[in-house]
Length: 259
Image: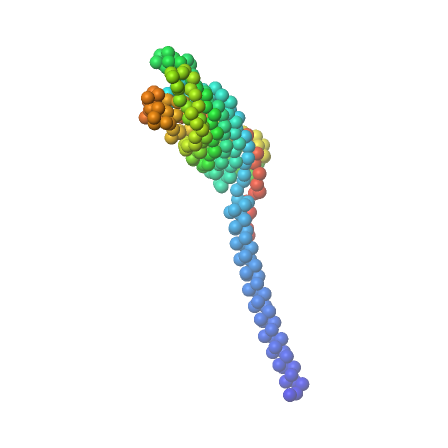
């Protein structure tokens, strides 16, 4: 084999190898771009496209049922709570909250003669864990620096712990029978505004419809004591939390990936 033939073969090898390297390089760049786009999309939808809130609730509670007044909003006992919100868009957020309060009611405060003459009263400790969805009437984009204000509604499902009550020997003050758990439906309306880049102040009223009628002792949980029942046993109990919320926001601005 002559020197010229050897040189031609090496030249051909160089051409083929260079083209192969260029082809592999082009493929690798495309794959890196695709992987980057996928990762960016994943991060933007799971981490950075949302913003989080954590905060407190401070207000009062009142009860609506078969004992005491039937005023819908009349806080009589202090209510405290913690909440977390995961804002999935400027219009809606997932919300988790824990609330607790002593709810109290007294027939003496009722305008109904039948109740005020009866004179029953009770106090019950409520602990509530709630999961739900909060919907904003206006866009509430927390990534924008300017102030924002919007009304909102919230609902979901709650698990409550309370004391089942009853009136023994016609006592006017309800006695505790046992601690129980049940489900309730929260229905909240409110308005909130951005104080600054990090803090949001809200005012809300939330009624809870329970699936129990023994929170006030009007319907005894023990069927053997059904003779102690009174009031409208076909209507379940309600309680209301009214107050202010203050939340701290955190989270990054959404990731916008170049095409």
